[in-house]
Length: 312
Ligand code: CP
Ligand code: NVA
Image (cartoon, rainbow, N blue to C red; front, side, top):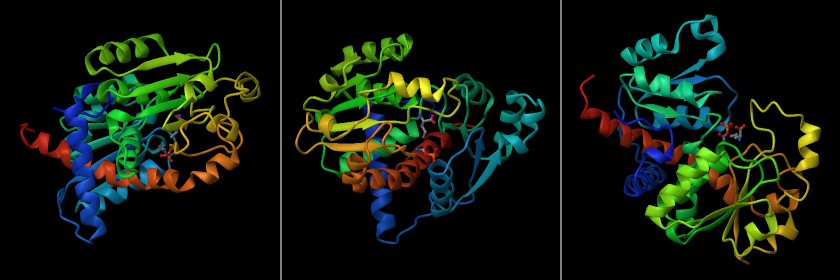
């Protein structure tokens, strides 16, 4: 059974296959062709945390594919009263065809996947946000980039987004320079996985505490909120430590003249990115947001194809 918990579980060819399928289904939708790839199928969406894009894109995506999505807030589930994840996975997967879950602890996704009889998709965990990365990669393809030629600078907090960029770069073989403030570095186990992958793919990966160096000649710059959901640090404290890590015009000037800027949203203007940089790049950022829908439709169809080969 193939699950989608991290890009690390996927080969370069598989990632590209999913992206091409997403692009094909997006083209069909743009021509008002909605093929029922997932007719009569149901996606269970478990949310432990808030969401706008993830919920809307998966729900609309399932509808456009001829299926249906169930919104399940953890607060309203028996999970909230102590029912085991194992039992929840067995029950939901006996009635639904795919599960998507947004959870605090990545290890809870692994439990869901272990007991589920259907594919489980990571809709964001403390460690990874791979569905977002598929939309980011689709966006960059559409903006004319050859994925192998990307030179990405990630400036800011070490979190599920920086980790997901590490998996994407190290699998696909592109350059990624990450700059985080001192004492907010990338988890060493995650970095090790990326560096090991990079030996195979030829990706150039580096981490530092120097945003100016990281962004030098990058053709894509990106960042994410400094206060992720579930973050227990003090906001004021963190803002002090992140001085110099706001992606502003001064930093962007060091990047390639044609550099693009991506943000998974929601954005906190004048914290992780200046209002000016955000506005200047809003076209690509909102294309990135829309592409959550298209990238995930490809992913859902791809996972379903794989599942067909399994006995339920
Ligand atoms: N980028 C993203 O996952 O947005 P939501 O939190 O709104 O789903
Ligand atoms: N790093 C952010 C991403 C939100 C989409 C968070 O986990 O809150």
